[in-house]
Image (cartoon, rainbow, N blue to C red):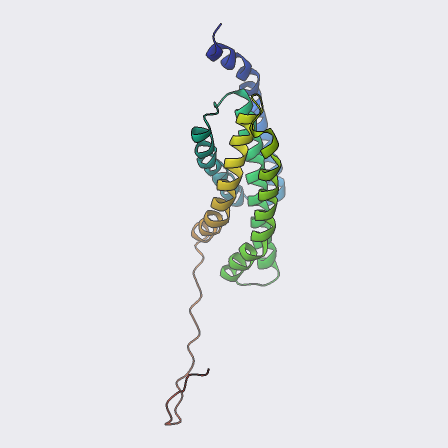
Length: 188
């Protein structure tokens, strides 16, 4: 049997449990998020990590085989975790009385550094196995997916949240004009 047939045979057991895995993940996320809308937002971001997977595998020449697919499954979990952290932070700020627009901005600013640093740490931890014949494809898939997926999550998820929930930017408070007869001087 050729390598393609062997790869297809080895992927069979994974494909058999994917529906169960998706159901369990959706159930756990539903318990955590308590909303189908928030669940949709979290799940919508996960596939965007595939951009990084392809961007890493193609130049490295690593195949998208069994081990790389395991890396993609782990990557989906990492990206979903990042999305849940951001969504929960937004919802916590709204519950505290923040304006929804301000909550999205503050949550993104507040969580950007921890999410980016943990993504960087996870990517750097994969470097030692990247040159290995067996584990290399998984390492490349995960590194590319984590880097691109995290950046996309931090940019795309807040925009998707604002669009999905139709949150409008609050109008800027205009200062009343100064009527002293004196021109307003710039302060230096």
